[in-house]
Image (cartoon, rainbow, N blue to C red):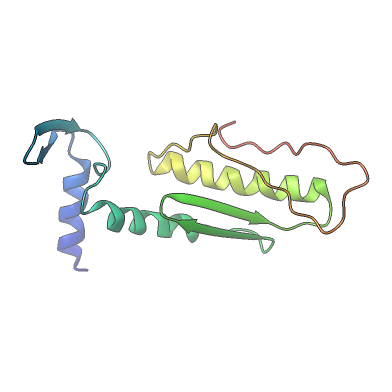
Length: 134
């Protein structure tokens, strides 16, 4: 993409006075937007993909793999103990939280889930303490 095209998109998305008009055969609606791309926009998936690339390219530890699908993010963390997994996971979620703040995105911590997959059941299993938004 040319630098001029990128600059035009940047200016479009940063304007505070954007008005999005939705027209169908049955109804008409106009809404003001101050950030982001409207739901169901033809530009939405492309812009999301461009933005998500920077999330996937964060400097994760060698024990971590980040995977995205649509607007979902999965962080896989590997460790030999519960404490090690907990520490790596918290390091990575802090990176993701910082990325989200910098990109004016909020992850819904109520919809975020943790799944523990293990070969052997830990002797002293306890709930992991992993934090996303503090």
